[in-house]
Image 1 (cartoon, rainbow, N blue to C red):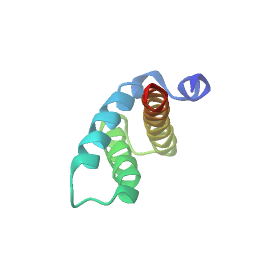
Image 2 (cartoon, rainbow, N blue to C red; image 1 turned 180 degrees about the vertical axis):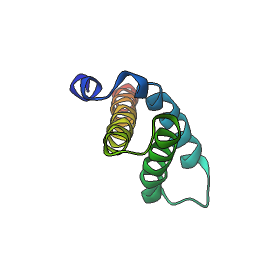
Image 3 (spheres, rainbow, N blue to C red; image 1 turned 30 degrees about the horizontal axis):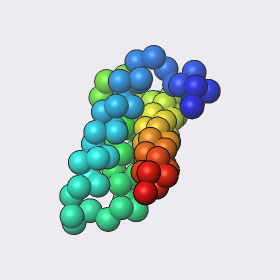
Image 4 (cartoon, one colour; image 1 turned 60 degrees about the horizontal axis):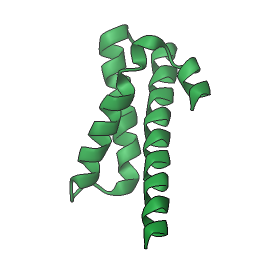
Length: 89
């Protein structure tokens, strides 16, 4: 994950926790299928990045990396938490 953060520009680091919170909210929304959450996050990241830093290939790449770090971080947390919960049982 550190490698991805080094590839991600510093001004995009704030996107990671924001995307995590938005993903959590989308996960709790009953009419949004789970498979589409990643696409919502990618679109949101690209749109906000374009408004903030301009429309460019660099914006698209950093948006993709920010979504990747957010989803990867969530999965690491989730898998670790669930593994610990299973051990306690």
